[in-house]
Image 1: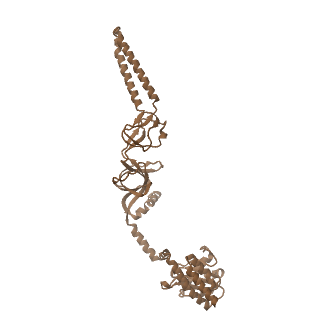
Image 2: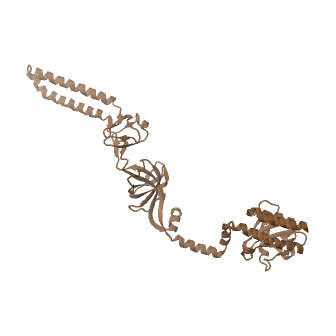
Length: 447
């Protein structure tokens, strides 16, 4: 008797020390054997004996819900939970169940079963689950009294640990049909709530009204005199072109002019002695003027081999080394000169993400170098036709202007990239969430 009392007290101490549901489940199905002998025990949980599910079984580490024993145990518990005395501790045998359960019982477990409900006394006796104990010998009154006492202790331990897991109770309540109906009606009402339609797109800071530096002649670039993002003053050299051929043309034109001038001077001097030479004066004077025009043209082309800045600004270009020796044509753009205080935002909105946009639409910008700060801007204009981006995507080009900033606020540097959130009109939450699936479905179905 003293050993049985010690085992009972020890089990209750272990139940109180359980720090998790898994540890409590293991203690219930395996350590109860020290107080009441049995062959197999199964712990099944379900509030008020509804939606019963096997949580643990003796002598196995995890529950395999595909095993025949677990499936049969849940069917057996579901049948016995419909009895009027299901909330009371009861003993059953094979002869008290239907033929289908009886046939499997003979193969699955011993013939004697003790049905032990686990009440939560702190919650007005709500049944949290049931413990099934199987063995071959009938159950004595003393053993039933011990389990009657332990059932309250186990139920209280389950109640205490489940209070630490509030979401478990929420999930159990969600299984009720009324709860699902209320949630469905609430969800339907929320779907009609108005929200602002928005879309995300990559953004880059570009110069506003920059000075375009283009090639003034056909030739090859010798070198660039400046570096990217370098400040440039008006008249400062920017690009040096190959000038060997143009310098030779200038020398030839200069020599041709000297020859024409010398020939004209000779005829002018001999005209005093030979009147026939005077007839050539007009021709030679025209030739001198032609040579002078050719020399002026060669000089102007030679002067263009050094390209200077038409104004002040910051140089916007790629790698200067890529331009060395590169042939260019007249009008080909080499770089931009931009005012660092005159910037705008270039947004490439992918066609698949496009939405209806209005003039002065609100834009929120998050730059990669400062993702925690948001810049406010407004849309200025958008292209009507999409264009292909370097990533081989079709996108609309949007231009936005930053809102007025304080004088001490530093504007983002030209070339800074980030993500822009462009806002459109207000739509229902349903349209906001299912806009893309609806579009894809219409394209696929051909509506």
